[in-house]
Length: 200
Image 1 (spheres, rainbow, N blue to C red):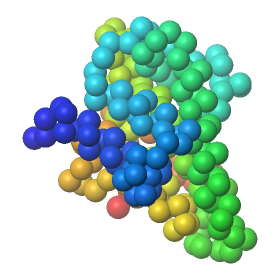
Image 2: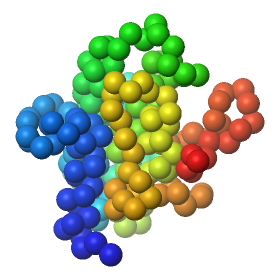
Image 3: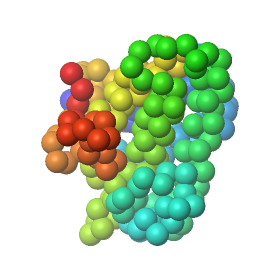
C-alpha cells in the first residue's frame, strides 16, 4: 500500500498528465488550468472543510450545471472558484481540440460528445461530493467518467485514464452505488442501457 505522501504525488502526476500532457508536467510550466491539480486532490487530503454546499440553486449560472449533490468546500463560497477553474480547463482543452478537424469522422462519437464528456470529467474532479456530518470529501469518481472521455475524444487530446494498478490511488472507484457517476444514468439518451461504473 502506498503512503499518503506517495498517493498524493501519484494523484497529482496523473491528473497533471491528463490535463496538460507530459511536456507540461515534466517542465512544470505554469498555465491557468493548473488550478485543477489542487482541487482534484481534496478527496485524498481528507481535510475538514468549512461546509458541504448545496449548489443546485446556482446551477443555471454555473458552468458545472450538472452537479446534483452537496459539494466539498475548503473555504466558504469556494465553489465559485472551482466552477471557474473547470471552465478554464475546458477552454484549454478546446484549444487543443480545435487543432483537429472535427468534420472528420473518428468513430461513432463527435467532438461535441467529446466536449460534453470532458466537462463531466473535470467537474467531477474539482467538485468532490461532500459528507454533511463530517464536512469531508467522499465518493471517488467512477472510473467510467474518465473512460467516457477516452471513448468519445479524438487522439489529438492524448487523454489517458489510470489503469487498474493506479486506479484507487488516482481517486477513482468502480464500486457500484457508491462511486460518483455525476448523475449519469443512461449510456445513451432514449435507450435503456445504464451508464456503468466501469467500461470494459
